[in-house]
Image (cartoon, rainbow, N blue to C red):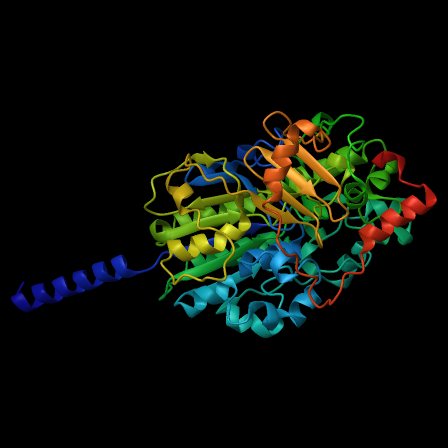
Length: 518
């Protein structure tokens, strides 16, 4: 081999090494909709089967005390992706209000995918990243993403099973439609999604669930060549309602052995009125009443459906992780997995997220970072989903963004046993807040009602200590983490109350608090 060829080979090797050293890490950004702590590694339900998540969590750091900013899809996701808390932005609920006030709230600040795109990343998205899929802002899609996957197409015959439920991505509904509507009638269609059912392939558009198509698209992207570092966002839809999944995932569970959540008979006795109003839900007469009076087993049936959906989502996640591990990008890709909020399955007589208790705010949060030694470790310090944006910015060596309200949790990824002591603020609508520290949950409602729970000896939050003088100093300390100023709901210039206040007034005027909330 002559000197020219040797020199050429050396130049190519040096160029390849330089590119490998200088290339920023890729990001695989995975969300799982409405996933609470019913994951094997989080021990929220000892019957759940999540082998792929459990295996993944052995490869990085699992944050077992992570909480959302607000326990509803729209607000939580826009908070995480903007890095701004709802109490600052006023983005509590309405997607339309968020769209109308986007420029006012965001200014020159960028949503997370746009920030990565503007800093040299190829950004790709599939599934539910924002509330309405890949974006809640149609005019911003190309600002956020270089490439997006098709949405889910549902034919009319399968749509009809949903009794008008919006959002193709959440279908299919059960074979015979919603059990709530079938039992109570169409006037109860505001609760049609609280249903479940095992599906066969003919019940699915093209024979596949949306999450299966999401996994396939993500796998295709992981098998492609990427000239730039990529930010691949993969948003799985299940276990969001309706609780439908392929039949084989129901077959994983023995229905007769499924257990209901444990709670005292007087679970709601020490809950303030605003908490009772939140627990009431959306169905006429109240969610818990509708569930428990439909049949003696419907509570268990919904848990059966949720467990099946969790295992189904876990299965699809496993496909994507396996594709990453078999790809050329395995050694230079950060994996972050999160859920937008939790989900109640009858705890506190509640059947939604949309609350300030542990089942609503606690979520899985996981980081796997190339080059960081911690693997298979758990961090039990309280952290927020707001921390994801600044952490990814730091991990990928992007410019700092002073607007971000979360904290980089790199110190905890490097050493999960480090002390942190940064309580997490969660909000439900205007001026209803929860502060979750490592030991305590403190809830302060806008009408002055309070709750306090000691998680060291009451992880189920069954005994409200707020009225006990012994804990006045604890409450005084936790109140310091409440917002100094609460933004009005986006698009509003004054506060005139909402459905929670109106419900309480109706109860007081008519002495009609439902018995199951007392």
